[in-house]
Length: 285
Image (cartoon, rainbow, N blue to C red; front, top):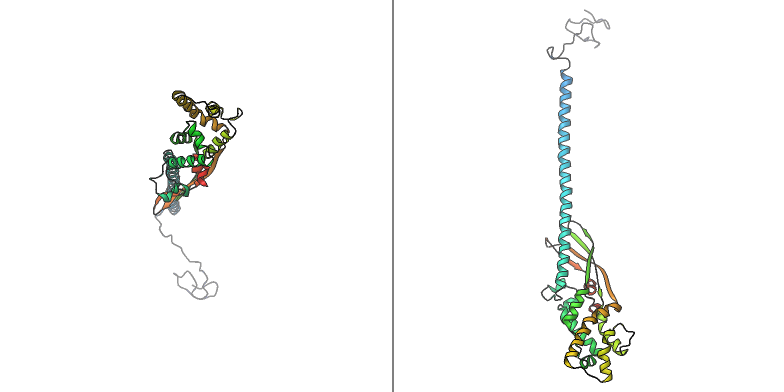
């Protein structure tokens, strides 16, 4: 047999001309597997695609669960840290009610409190020094009036207020925003001095002192029982009357907690928060 293209002879089993390379008319093509159904290859490819899709969906689901778990865990951690920091702030102001920071590491205290960790002693000294400075201590003594420091401190605490206004927390830092306020008890000695200077005028806010001071200026005295009762009544109403006209102290500040040496601790505290809370602006001077 000869190639119809170039005329070269070729064998019966040849499918391509050995000379020109053209396909010969007697070429036969045998299927790979005569017993395999015609659609089996397509079905096999389709089954493999379904398996790959199923594996992809499973992997995607696992990734979504892991991502959701990480996000949820982070927010749970942030929530827990926020609550712990809020509790720590409440503990700080619970300690503040004792008005004694002598047991606290001085490095954690504002500078003024480092110098005066016992607030009650500070108040006692401040009141005594102020009354002496205004030259009214002798008058009060002759009138039988004593400013009870412990009672004054109780009044300070009765008016003290604080509020957590906001908290901002990250994985290693928590900033608590706090508002504190109180009557400015630093102005109390000056108020006493002014009342005496005004000779207890009827227009003053401290009308409850009129009787006892009028006895001083008129030269009349009181017997022990009446004096004791009068002093008790005066001191009981003194602070209420004082608050009606006294200025107030208000401060917005922050208390910051963070990780130091591998553990959560107090990093900083705005000093003015305490001065405002106690109503003792003189502390900051």
